[in-house]
Image (cartoon, rainbow, N blue to C red):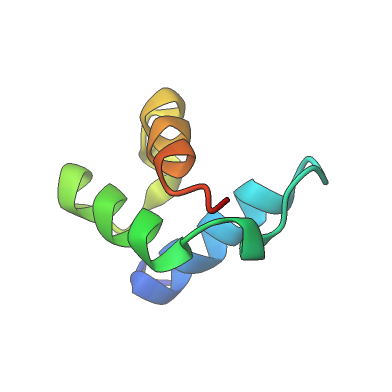
Length: 63
């Protein structure tokens, strides 16, 4: 399957909800996807540095 904004979005949602402590509603998902893509220039988020990914996600935690 080719990587796209849709696969990146699915990856983000799965990662955020994996531990059961947060849901997609707790984050600005489109902002996480856009920022991660802009910094890495890839839709294949499986290869994005985990620390970078989680720092981006934390930035877009909605209160």
